Image 1: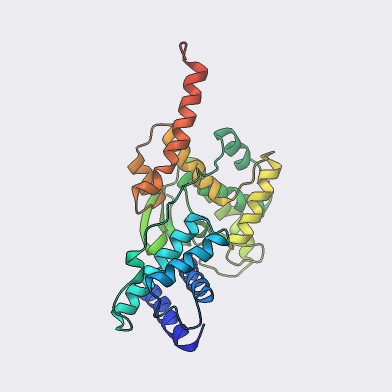
Image 2: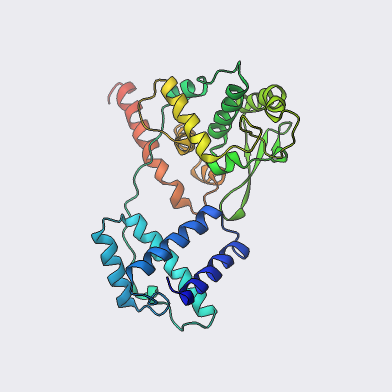
Length: 296
């Protein structure tokens, strides 16, 4: 990436952070897409690329085996970048406007049965400080359908235990209030009163969940913890923190929750994002009908 291109890309990323309030992870994804596009095009061509240039770019990425979802994200990154260049008087048109949209085939997210979730939540050793912390994190993750970044980013003032709600800052710095449920509330109380002071060891920290050294938990650290508890619970499938978010949505729909309510709880901007879970719920309901209806 030459100096001129780098200058415009950095200005674009700065705008995403300052004006749009996008998360670090989202901004990093835009940066990665633009770097990949610049690498595939000839030096300096990204700024003045034509629609034909971009068709060539996407053809190259297809040959490399990039998924349709990845191409769609690249298209979005380029479209926003060229809008920025137009507003900055660097170019006059957006070459992405004439490109066809990549067809996306959404895969149904993996989830867990209610029995598996119960086993996972019971796996931590609550006689230890780390076990109390991990059980509170797992209970809160499942009770509220949080993203792992939202979970580890929770601060002390994010929770109202008396009201039973947690204030979450999601994608695009959008705020939402999510009910916690009695099991999650009690787990957080147990952790806060018994384990957190010992993890702090006389220090201070505004984050709710702390590492063994009294620092903020990282997404990577919790990812390893949930893998560990899945193994203890005898769960053979490959799971991640996001699996509990999927389970949260699926189990709510299985028990009759309205799709728009689930959308609000998950913090989805678009209802179509939430609708992917209806496929799982419908499959589950069909299996129940098959097993229990006398004329199925």
